[in-house]
Image 1 (cartoon, rainbow, N blue to C red):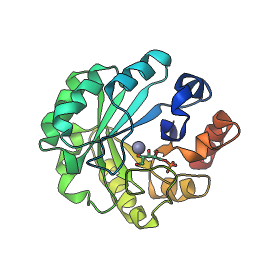
Image 2 (cartoon, rainbow, N blue to C red; image 1 turned 45 degrees about the vertical axis):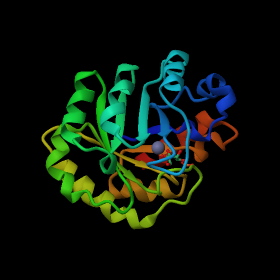
Image 3 (tube, helix red, strand yellow; image 1 turned 135 degrees about the vertical axis):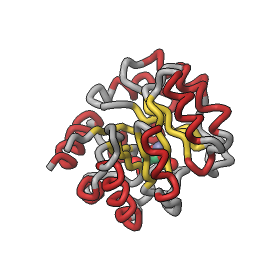
Image 4 (cartoon, helix red, strand yellow; image 1 turned 180 degrees about the vertical axis):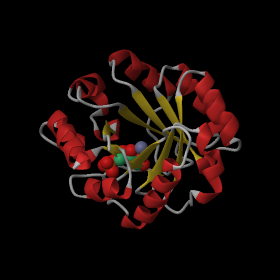
Amino acid sequence: MSACIHPSILSADFARLAEELARIPGSDAVHVDVMDGHFVPNLTLGLPVVQAIRAATDLPLDIHLMIEDADRWAPDYAEAGAESVTFHAEAARAPVLLARTLRSAGAKAGMAVRPATPIEPYLDLLPELDMLLVMTVEPGFGGQSFLDVTLPKIRRARQALDGAPAPIALQVDGGVNRETILRAAEAGADVFVAGSAVFGADDPDAAIAGLRALARD
Ligand code: DX5
Ligand code: ZN
């Protein structure tokens, strides 16, 4: 199966973002964690910084919105030129309409679920999505440990996506490293977000290549 690695800039040096982006040319996309201090107990960055990142790199941007009122704000990130915009199922009032709005603004539509949120209520929505994100930590902070309790959900998601009429990516985010990526890939994930495992390495681009090779094994 193909394996895409999306480094999370949450683990990068925010004072030197352009330099940090230049260290990861082998990324399949740059994962940008937008947190509002309400949906999650952490505050990171918003639209102006995403616009600056858009101007600073040619890499695709994978925006992960951990914000309340996703319906109101997510389309702005599509308009800013993101390749994909992922909202949380728990934060969207009208996920089908939101996914359609994102697509019509030119972005891929992603939907994320927290570790305790089942995917089953959302299976009928899958054709509206380009990506499903199964969180493998509680969202809010980088550097947490991968939650193995999410593996059965990743397996169920893989089964559901394999039955979908069009390809839908299955992303995992949180605690992905050279050890846990093996379990996530075996369970069926094909897009892997990694923050500390990439930016904590001496050579982030080599770390990306190493993770990709492990996921493809
Ligand atoms: C957590 C974020 C993740 C985080 C991953 O809420 O969504 O993208 O940056 O960081 P690591 O890979 O260090 O767990
Ligand atoms: Zn994320």
